[in-house]
Structures are given as C-alpha cells and as structure tokens.
Image (cartoon, rainbow, N blue to C red; front, side):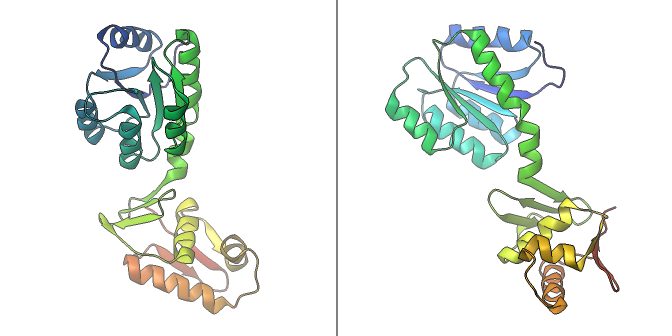
Amino acid sequence: MKVTDKKQILVVEDNDDYRELMTKILAKEGYEADLVATSLKGLELLAQKKYHLLISDLYLDSIDGIKLATTAKNINPGMKTLILTGNPQEATEMRAVENEIDLYLSKEKNLPLILKYIENLLSTASLDDRQVLLESHSENIVMNIKTHEVFKDNKEIDLTPKEFELLQLFLENKNVRLDRSYIVDQIWGGDNIVSRVIDVHVKNLRDKLQVYSIASIRGFGYKWNER
C-alpha cells in the first residue's frame, strides 16, 4: 500500500545491488528517500536534513550501523532507526537493543515483510515527534522531553525537575486557563501544598527563561499566552 503522507527516509547501504533495490521499492511505495553508500555521507545528510527514519546496513566503512543510528538519535531524538544485516548475530542484535535501535532485521526477510516493518515504524513517528519536542515560537523556547533539556534563544537553561514539569504543562496547554487545583494535581500528584509554592515555581520560570507569556489570572491560576 502506497503512503499518502510522505516520510523522509535515509538509507545507508554500501552494497550497490541492495541499495538499488531499496531505491526502487521505497520509490514504488511513495516514500521520499536519500540513499548513500557510506556512513560519513550519511552523517553529513543527518546534519542537514530532518529524517523520519534511518535504515542502515550493519557493517559500514568508518562506523557501523549501530553507532550511526545512535548518533542519528542524538541529532534527532524522534527519528526511528532500522538496522538491516546480511549476517545477523545474537551479539550484534543485543548491541542494537542496548542502544535502543527500533528494529534489527535480517536482509533475508522478504521485501513485503520489510516494507510492513517500515510502515509500522513510520506510523508512530509523528506521535513520537510531538511527544519528544515542545516549542514556543513566541518565546523561542524548545524543550526535549526525552533528554530533559530546555533551550531559550538556542541557549540551554537549567531547570529543576518541578520547573521542567511546570513548563511542560504550560507548553502542552497553550492559551488554556489552568486553575491551581489542576496544576497541583498534574505536578504534585494532588498533594496538599500552599498556593505560594506554585507562585514561587512560576516566578522562577519567568526569571530563568525571561518570558512574558505566563499570565496570572487572579483567583484562578495561570495561562500561557502564545501568539
């Protein structure tokens, strides 16, 4: 079945025949794919373009597919990774699992099955992207849920765990009025805390991030205003 929402795929494969075969089947299925023969070229493209999926041969020139896939996830945490190998071994499969590679498959599997695996991986890629990264264009903030990093104007900001959770709550609910009881339930698990605790955390967020989007609503709570 051909895809209607095209996904960007990078294939790193040093076997000319297999790379040509992958080119044909991915194009036939409606995917937009870049195919290269070396890990160095793969790294170059990963730095230039955001891909939804990396498909890599296990044994490459300078670094192997598992190291390449790990680097790819560091560049783009929402990217899916698939290792294909003509020589599957338990030891390398274990390495793939330990490095959080999404799939490790033998090239001996038939192409319709490999394509089905690719389809399943990509069907969850967009959801994962939304879960991993939250942004405020108004304040030029990007937060990575997976790595617990927050950047303001491309500079990393150090937040406490509760400040991080509070910012996440705001960015997931832009332009929504959040009452104090809801904030307490989401961040402190419904514990009995005084209102002053919320106010202090909000003040700290404002100071650390130098933001003006957090509006106080008297007698109610707070709202993140996003233009």
